[in-house]
Image 1 (cartoon, rainbow, N blue to C red):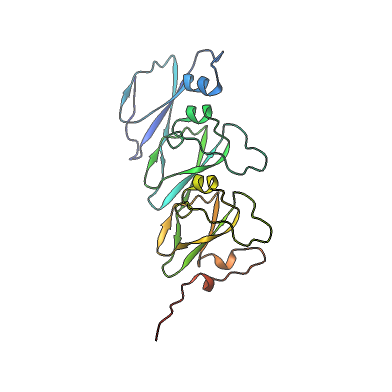
Image 2 (cartoon, helix red, strand yellow):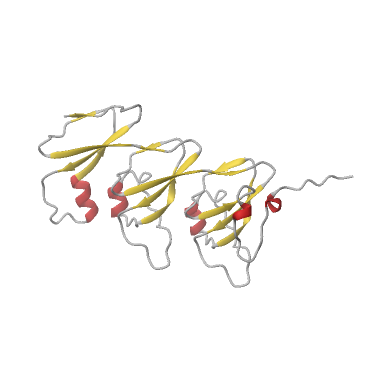
Length: 232
Protein backbone atom coordinates (compact mmCIF):
# COMPACT_ATOMS: atom_id res chain seq x y z
CA UNK A 1 0.00 0.00 0.00
CA UNK A 2 1.32 3.43 -0.95
CA UNK A 3 0.11 6.73 0.51
CA UNK A 4 0.83 9.96 -1.34
CA UNK A 5 0.78 13.23 0.57
CA UNK A 6 2.32 16.69 0.38
CA UNK A 7 6.12 16.74 0.60
CA UNK A 8 7.89 19.94 1.60
CA UNK A 9 4.69 21.85 0.74
CA UNK A 10 5.02 20.82 -2.91
CA UNK A 11 2.43 18.53 -4.54
CA UNK A 12 3.84 15.25 -5.76
CA UNK A 13 2.67 12.29 -7.77
CA UNK A 14 3.74 8.69 -8.21
CA UNK A 15 5.05 6.91 -11.29
CA UNK A 16 4.06 3.27 -10.97
CA UNK A 17 5.75 0.72 -13.24
CA UNK A 18 4.91 -2.95 -13.38
CA UNK A 19 8.03 -5.05 -12.68
CA UNK A 20 6.83 -8.19 -14.44
CA UNK A 21 4.67 -8.85 -17.46
CA UNK A 22 4.87 -9.29 -21.19
CA UNK A 23 4.94 -6.52 -23.76
CA UNK A 24 4.02 -9.07 -26.42
CA UNK A 25 1.23 -8.14 -28.86
CA UNK A 26 0.08 -5.00 -27.00
CA UNK A 27 -1.46 -3.52 -30.17
CA UNK A 28 0.75 -0.42 -30.00
CA UNK A 29 3.64 1.03 -28.05
CA UNK A 30 1.18 3.38 -26.32
CA UNK A 31 -0.97 0.43 -25.26
CA UNK A 32 2.08 -1.37 -23.88
CA UNK A 33 3.20 1.68 -21.93
CA UNK A 34 -0.32 2.30 -20.65
CA UNK A 35 -0.54 -1.31 -19.49
CA UNK A 36 2.73 -1.22 -17.56
CA UNK A 37 2.96 2.39 -16.37
CA UNK A 38 0.50 4.71 -14.63
CA UNK A 39 0.57 8.05 -12.85
CA UNK A 40 -1.13 8.42 -9.47
CA UNK A 41 -2.22 11.73 -7.95
CA UNK A 42 -1.37 12.71 -4.38
CA UNK A 43 -3.46 12.79 -1.19
CA UNK A 44 -4.95 9.37 -1.81
CA UNK A 45 -4.25 5.78 -0.74
CA UNK A 46 -3.51 3.19 -3.42
CA UNK A 47 -2.95 -0.54 -3.23
CA UNK A 48 0.00 -1.59 -5.38
CA UNK A 49 1.91 -4.72 -4.20
CA UNK A 50 5.60 -3.90 -3.82
CA UNK A 51 6.65 -7.24 -5.28
CA UNK A 52 4.81 -6.45 -8.53
CA UNK A 53 5.23 -2.68 -8.94
CA UNK A 54 8.08 -0.18 -8.72
CA UNK A 55 7.00 3.22 -7.43
CA UNK A 56 8.90 6.48 -7.95
CA UNK A 57 7.85 9.89 -6.69
CA UNK A 58 8.22 13.17 -8.54
CA UNK A 59 7.09 16.79 -8.13
CA UNK A 60 4.23 18.09 -10.22
CA UNK A 61 5.18 20.67 -12.83
CA UNK A 62 4.27 24.01 -11.25
CA UNK A 63 3.80 27.01 -13.53
CA UNK A 64 3.92 30.42 -11.77
CA UNK A 65 1.12 32.91 -12.38
CA UNK A 66 3.29 35.13 -14.59
CA UNK A 67 4.67 32.31 -16.71
CA UNK A 68 3.76 29.47 -19.07
CA UNK A 69 5.20 26.02 -19.60
CA UNK A 70 6.56 25.12 -23.02
CA UNK A 71 6.46 21.36 -23.44
CA UNK A 72 9.06 19.30 -25.31
CA UNK A 73 8.14 15.69 -26.02
CA UNK A 74 10.98 13.22 -25.59
CA UNK A 75 9.08 10.32 -27.18
CA UNK A 76 6.71 9.97 -30.09
CA UNK A 77 6.80 10.13 -33.86
CA UNK A 78 9.58 12.06 -35.57
CA UNK A 79 8.91 15.50 -37.01
CA UNK A 80 8.47 15.55 -40.76
CA UNK A 81 10.95 17.21 -43.05
CA UNK A 82 10.97 21.02 -42.62
CA UNK A 83 8.59 20.70 -39.65
CA UNK A 84 9.83 22.67 -36.66
CA UNK A 85 7.00 22.17 -34.18
CA UNK A 86 4.90 19.11 -33.43
CA UNK A 87 1.26 18.84 -34.43
CA UNK A 88 -1.22 19.37 -31.62
CA UNK A 89 -2.67 16.26 -29.97
CA UNK A 90 -5.43 16.55 -27.32
CA UNK A 91 -4.09 14.68 -24.27
CA UNK A 92 -5.21 16.55 -21.14
CA UNK A 93 -2.32 19.01 -21.24
CA UNK A 94 0.17 16.15 -21.78
CA UNK A 95 -0.95 14.42 -18.59
CA UNK A 96 -2.29 11.47 -20.59
CA UNK A 97 0.95 10.24 -22.17
CA UNK A 98 -0.65 7.06 -23.57
CA UNK A 99 -3.21 9.09 -25.55
CA UNK A 100 -0.44 11.40 -26.73
CA UNK A 101 1.50 8.45 -28.15
CA UNK A 102 -1.52 6.60 -29.50
CA UNK A 103 -2.80 9.72 -31.29
CA UNK A 104 0.41 10.29 -33.22
CA UNK A 105 2.06 12.79 -30.89
CA UNK A 106 5.45 13.90 -32.15
CA UNK A 107 8.77 14.54 -30.50
CA UNK A 108 10.04 18.07 -30.04
CA UNK A 109 8.45 21.38 -29.01
CA UNK A 110 4.67 21.33 -28.74
CA UNK A 111 2.11 23.93 -29.83
CA UNK A 112 -0.01 23.79 -26.70
CA UNK A 113 1.45 25.36 -23.56
CA UNK A 114 0.80 24.75 -19.88
CA UNK A 115 -1.27 27.67 -18.54
CA UNK A 116 -0.04 29.83 -15.70
CA UNK A 117 -0.89 29.18 -12.08
CA UNK A 118 -1.41 25.41 -12.38
CA UNK A 119 0.18 22.13 -11.31
CA UNK A 120 0.54 19.37 -13.90
CA UNK A 121 1.26 15.65 -13.66
CA UNK A 122 3.62 15.00 -16.59
CA UNK A 123 5.69 11.87 -16.95
CA UNK A 124 9.34 13.05 -16.88
CA UNK A 125 10.48 10.29 -19.25
CA UNK A 126 8.06 11.47 -21.91
CA UNK A 127 8.04 15.26 -21.51
CA UNK A 128 10.37 18.08 -20.52
CA UNK A 129 8.89 21.45 -19.57
CA UNK A 130 10.57 24.82 -19.96
CA UNK A 131 9.11 27.56 -17.75
CA UNK A 132 9.22 30.97 -19.45
CA UNK A 133 7.83 34.35 -18.51
CA UNK A 134 4.73 35.60 -20.27
CA UNK A 135 5.42 38.27 -22.85
CA UNK A 136 5.01 41.69 -21.22
CA UNK A 137 4.31 44.72 -23.40
CA UNK A 138 4.72 48.00 -21.47
CA UNK A 139 2.04 50.70 -21.45
CA UNK A 140 2.08 53.25 -24.27
CA UNK A 141 3.93 50.83 -26.52
CA UNK A 142 3.17 47.93 -28.86
CA UNK A 143 4.76 44.55 -29.45
CA UNK A 144 5.78 43.33 -32.89
CA UNK A 145 5.38 39.58 -33.39
CA UNK A 146 7.68 37.57 -35.65
CA UNK A 147 6.52 34.02 -36.39
CA UNK A 148 9.14 31.28 -36.55
CA UNK A 149 6.67 28.69 -37.85
CA UNK A 150 4.09 28.57 -40.61
CA UNK A 151 3.99 28.91 -44.36
CA UNK A 152 6.69 30.76 -46.27
CA UNK A 153 5.75 34.33 -47.09
CA UNK A 154 5.23 35.12 -50.76
CA UNK A 155 8.19 36.82 -52.51
CA UNK A 156 8.12 40.60 -52.24
CA UNK A 157 5.98 40.66 -49.09
CA UNK A 158 7.32 42.26 -45.93
CA UNK A 159 4.39 41.35 -43.67
CA UNK A 160 2.71 37.99 -43.30
CA UNK A 161 -1.02 37.47 -43.89
CA UNK A 162 -3.24 38.31 -40.95
CA UNK A 163 -4.67 35.40 -38.96
CA UNK A 164 -7.00 35.81 -35.97
CA UNK A 165 -5.43 33.77 -33.16
CA UNK A 166 -6.11 35.52 -29.85
CA UNK A 167 -3.05 37.77 -30.01
CA UNK A 168 -0.87 34.80 -31.04
CA UNK A 169 -1.80 32.92 -27.86
CA UNK A 170 -3.55 30.20 -29.91
CA UNK A 171 -0.74 28.64 -31.90
CA UNK A 172 -2.90 25.89 -33.40
CA UNK A 173 -5.37 28.44 -34.76
CA UNK A 174 -2.50 30.43 -36.25
CA UNK A 175 -1.21 27.41 -38.16
CA UNK A 176 -4.66 26.10 -39.12
CA UNK A 177 -5.50 29.54 -40.51
CA UNK A 178 -2.50 29.52 -42.82
CA UNK A 179 -0.27 31.74 -40.71
CA UNK A 180 3.03 32.66 -42.30
CA UNK A 181 6.54 33.06 -41.00
CA UNK A 182 7.95 36.52 -40.52
CA UNK A 183 6.71 39.83 -39.14
CA UNK A 184 2.98 39.92 -38.44
CA UNK A 185 0.67 42.84 -39.28
CA UNK A 186 -1.24 42.60 -35.97
CA UNK A 187 0.48 44.34 -33.06
CA UNK A 188 0.21 43.47 -29.38
CA UNK A 189 -1.36 46.30 -27.37
CA UNK A 190 0.64 47.63 -24.44
CA UNK A 191 -0.20 47.20 -20.79
CA UNK A 192 -0.80 43.44 -20.87
CA UNK A 193 0.94 40.10 -20.54
CA UNK A 194 0.51 37.45 -23.22
CA UNK A 195 0.76 33.66 -22.97
CA UNK A 196 2.68 33.29 -26.23
CA UNK A 197 4.62 30.16 -27.11
CA UNK A 198 8.14 31.43 -27.65
CA UNK A 199 9.00 28.25 -29.56
CA UNK A 200 6.65 29.60 -32.25
CA UNK A 201 6.93 33.38 -31.98
CA UNK A 202 9.44 36.06 -31.10
CA UNK A 203 8.03 39.31 -29.74
CA UNK A 204 9.93 42.56 -30.15
CA UNK A 205 9.19 45.18 -27.48
CA UNK A 206 10.85 48.38 -26.33
CA UNK A 207 12.81 46.24 -23.89
CA UNK A 208 14.59 44.15 -26.52
CA UNK A 209 14.26 46.15 -29.74
CA UNK A 210 17.88 47.32 -29.60
CA UNK A 211 19.13 43.74 -29.89
CA UNK A 212 16.40 42.37 -32.15
CA UNK A 213 16.89 41.79 -35.86
CA UNK A 214 14.37 42.08 -38.68
CA UNK A 215 16.79 41.27 -41.45
CA UNK A 216 17.44 44.35 -43.57
CA UNK A 217 15.01 46.45 -41.52
CA UNK A 218 16.24 48.42 -38.53
CA UNK A 219 13.95 48.78 -35.52
CA UNK A 220 14.47 51.02 -32.51
CA UNK A 221 12.55 51.27 -29.23
CA UNK A 222 11.11 54.58 -30.44
CA UNK A 223 9.41 52.76 -33.32
CA UNK A 224 7.32 50.80 -30.79
CA UNK A 225 6.18 53.75 -28.68
CA UNK A 226 2.74 55.25 -29.21
CA UNK A 227 2.66 58.80 -30.48
CA UNK A 228 0.13 61.19 -29.03
CA UNK A 229 -1.50 63.52 -31.58
CA UNK A 230 -3.37 66.45 -30.07
CA UNK A 231 -5.95 68.44 -31.96
CA UNK A 232 -6.06 72.15 -32.03
